[in-house]
Length: 275
Image (cartoon, rainbow, N blue to C red; front, side, top):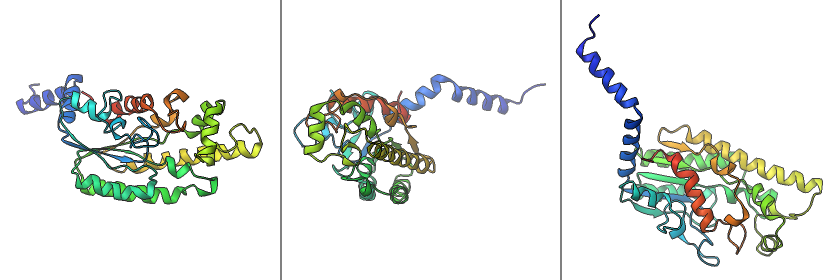
């Protein structure tokens, strides 16, 4: 049976679209098309403590940083042929309640690519009782994501999972320097209080805090899946077995330059912008 010419054209086009080379070309084109990007989040996105004592170091941000030592998403987009204007709209100390304002700034910037990393401060509080509820976290995160979807309907949004803060306790509890910093600076006491204690109450507290982070990550995945332009990292950041050497020696909590570089390496391939 002779296949009509129109059908042959359609089949040929479909085969080309499904070919690996076509996919690579499409992702490379997506990278080059990004003319503006924005990073939303907290002190991790601001590069806090990555270049100086208790200061923001946005040049070393895993997302929009300009430093070659980090090889951020911004730098990788440049290497792919794009020349994006980078807007770091994160804020050190931010919680999910601050995300709406950041989303509005990302929209105002006309970002074609947005990264989101939020939630560590909603679990890392002065006590377990101070953690954000899962319901409140979901409501606020969904509101911010709807703002992005409405204001930037063509943008790609990458949502990174919250790091496993129990992993931080695991790799740092044996370090006297880390324990001293956590106590003196009152860092993430919901998880890091009494770091060497094996009492059942402390063991169970750490498990509950870790579960809250897991619940927050489930929210990130669920809400992101509601929007066509959103990509969740599938728990890649949460599941990565980072080491104490990736943490700032000033507080043993925030990523240092090596930690920021690691975040960029783990997350960028998941944005779908790699050529």
